Amino acid sequence: MSKMFKVTKVGVVLLIIMMIFSLGNTTSYANNGGENTEVSIFFKNFINEAFSDINKLRVKNHDGEDVTDYFLNKTITLFEKEDYKAIREIIINEELVPSIRKITDIENNIDLMRASRTQTFSDYEYKNEAARNGFGRLEWTTLLTGTVTYDPNTGQILSAPNPSIHLHYTGGGWDLPGEMSNVSTSRRIYSSYVNFSGRYKMTVDIEIIDVNGVTWLTVLDFGTHVHSFDAYPDF
Image (cartoon, rainbow, N blue to C red; front, side, top):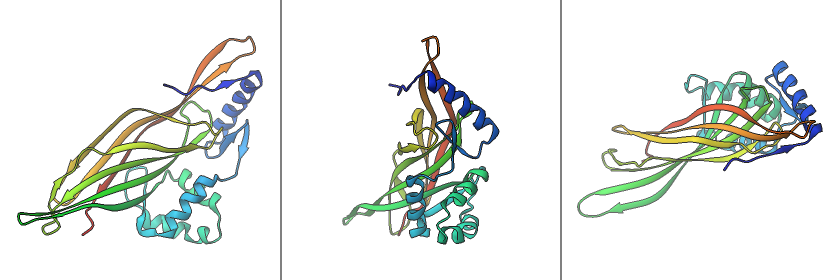
């Protein structure tokens, strides 16, 4: 079921202001009809965790290319200065997608016939997007989780079911929770790794009451996205 948010007459005016502001400056947050230059606690926590162990950090550009080293070189000094706003602007302006990847051993089976090892890969991906219809920005993370069973002696992948994808957090803009729809997941097994992928559409539904008391629905469209990564077993 969609999440509805009622907006009063004053809210209508603020929405109009918000739309105008967003069209004029698509790299800034809009909140309550004005500019919000503050960085969310969520974003700070995400960046702090990413830099606490850079081996878990992955950063892709708009074309899906790995630009982790480039991102670290450009932001390490900013992080040391705790300039989270500048880091966020780099992510937004350069359309970068950072993620934090974790690997967990969940099963280790050894018998006389064969050995197998199972690991779970969890990838937290951060997105910060402008609404396609001009109503400010939304930040969120998705959690894409996949499981791989493989032979630790040969490295051969034995099995890998389809992954799961969940909306982990939404915020920014007017702090309205986003909603995933048209969700699908897939996996492709190769000889030594598995590609996990999740596709979804992100929207926010707002129920507006205009000056005449008429109610109408506005859908804030934040686009269709693909969250994917390659899972290499950790021997």
